[in-house]
Image 1 (spheres, rainbow, N blue to C red):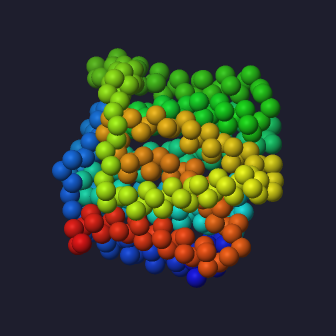
Image 2: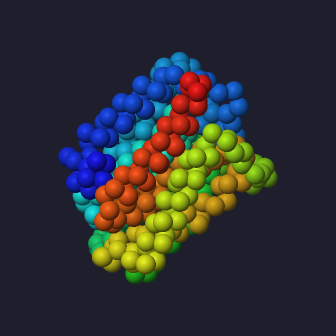
Image 3: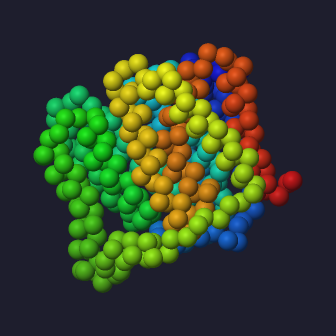
Length: 328
């Protein structure tokens, strides 16, 4: 069923993806508004998100962001050879995880942030075994730095660029200087504009101070527990599979997996960011988990086992969405 579809590339998986998406799309209109959402300390994002008040428009924009994120994941799968080109399990896993934050309250900060992070990843992976890559490195760092003005927690991914280039490419001091320039440019542009127009100067530095000063343990919604158990088990299985069977049959796949494991380690402090509950954290983790779990599912020889794991994973997500609608 699912196993036979998602290991046949875009043509094989699009029908099942569309069916699941239509189910989620219909269900999302019954989601109730929340009263305890926290977006602290992303002040700049709060201002932008507050400009749209219509619940229907907010929900449609969130769906658009979800589809855009899926498109970038599919682009990476098809072009970057960090997994098999016919392996569309990463697209499915990314889709299922990102469904968690569909809401009518505000445009999802993490759906929007994930698109920028994915684009930066695409630019970084595209530097493998290429000579002239300074523009790609600059673009990756520039957009990741600009994303700080939407989600200050992206600061934890800055070291990821240095680590990824160290894994993917031999050391080149020009490339590392370009990383610093790419990170600095959005901050410099914003500080100049804030000085000229008199608004919220030193935003990044003040927000960083607020974020680190308000670290606390995230709150756990018990309705999310089945999903957390399912995604944790899939992640553990993918680690065991990588240790037993290796990180991949090509050098680039092996290096890409190493990058994704570093990604997971670097964002561990996000568990303590004020206002970042487990649902939002799962979206940050959805990028590396999609490729790691997707590669594990593609490598399983038993189609029945893949179908069982996927059905449990999807059912746990649908359970959480249904609970948000108060239909149960």
